[in-house]
Amino acid sequence: MPLGRRRFLGLSTATIAAAGIGDKIAAQMPASGKPRNVLLIIADDQGYDMSCVGTPVQTPVLDRLAGEGTLFTEGYATVSSCSSSRSTLFTGLYSHTNGMYGLAHDVHNFSLLDDVKTIPWMLKQAGYTTCLVGKKHVKPDTLLPYDSWLVPEESGKRDVAIMAHEAGRWIKEQGDKPFFVTIGYSDPHRAPVNFGNTQDWPEVQTRRYAPSEVEIPSHLPDLPGVREDLAEYYTSVSRLDAGVGLLLQELKESGHENDTLVIYLSDNGRPFPGAKDALYTEGIHLPLIVRAPGGKGGVRSRAMVSWIDVGPTILDWARVKPPADYRYALPGRSLLPILDQPDPPGWDRVFATHSFHEINQYYPMRAVRTRRYSYYRNLEPSLAFAISGDMEVSPSWKAISSTPGAKLGKRTVKSYLHRPAEELYDLRADPLELVNLAGKPSHAAALADLRKQLDEWRTATHDPWQKGVTDPFGHAH
Image 1 (cartoon, rainbow, N blue to C red):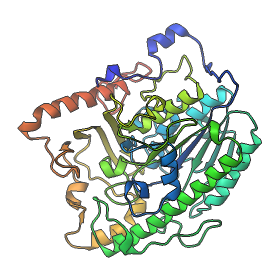
Image 2: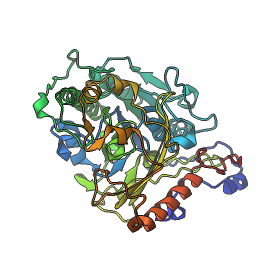
Image 3: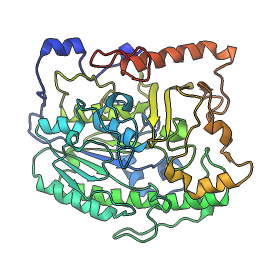
Image 4: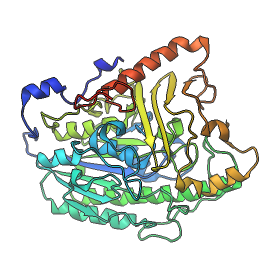
């Protein structure tokens, strides 16, 4: 679908200038006055791993949630890096637009641009009370003005029960006021290597996995160290699942189960080489479950949807619009109209972006994915793709790097670290993205078309890495 035909949530600069309405937020509550609440649940580094999609890890709560709502089987993050991905969820803008080019914490110190407005800020202006539980990982705090921040993330701490109970207590205290709650889990992130599995946690029955039980994903080799590492990851995913169960029980007991939109997703791919930080399938194809009150349950949607659509979905549910004079048009679309449709038309393309992970891990990439093809533009192909710090010390990477001839699945380590300027893959014939068709005459037309789509998208989203691009302030780069 041509970029200009997508339904954008936002206003053009010209329309904004003519309106001249300031930061006023438009909010329309239902005639009944019943609040339209939102619970956004963000897993940390969970790949497309749930028992309801065939992975051996046990996730009965997520399976049940998918049965009560819509499971998007083609849900894609816009970037496979923690802070950048969360920034998209919080702003409805791609990370190269909102300024969150890499990690927020420590020396990396990336942050949102000063004039960006966030989803919690917009909801607050419309009368919502807001609460963050757990991990934030986006800066600055002034642009994410949650009314409460409960159980802030602590390294190695995975007490999902206290997170659930604190969230439940806060929700009950709000009475009939509309609320927006963000739950930022630390599971199943590494801590940095043990996934928080060095102890049992309250109210959670620890599920241990034998290395023989795990499934080797397509981007990893079948080595003992990898299997042991995946078993620890599975344990963390199952603990996360139990925590979500406690959280949803708290929501039910608060009396708000039937007026709260629940969105469950992960920020980026599993924390293993070949997934996290990568824009290949395993890095951005992730769980997405949406349960809307009164909605049809048990829907499996093939719509290609993106995390860029999450912000517009929340605003649509809350009946809140961005400020009339906001410089940035949100490029996503609300998912609410398609929740009951297994295969809605017009949802056949997603875009992805990556600039940094850690401050010294610069590797700018842009990508477009359709039903048929994935196309990657590596903007600095002379650089080597970096392995992030948490994965570099992992048992998996140690096993791979110490085993002569070991590959990342069927991809050589060398080809993973050193990439050409363009990559084109036919996903029907080559779902593992191994055979680069960018130089093949037989695919020249497809390459030209995807180049054009990517360039149009980069222009529309004010990508500062694109030569000649004009930013929302009218400045050319």
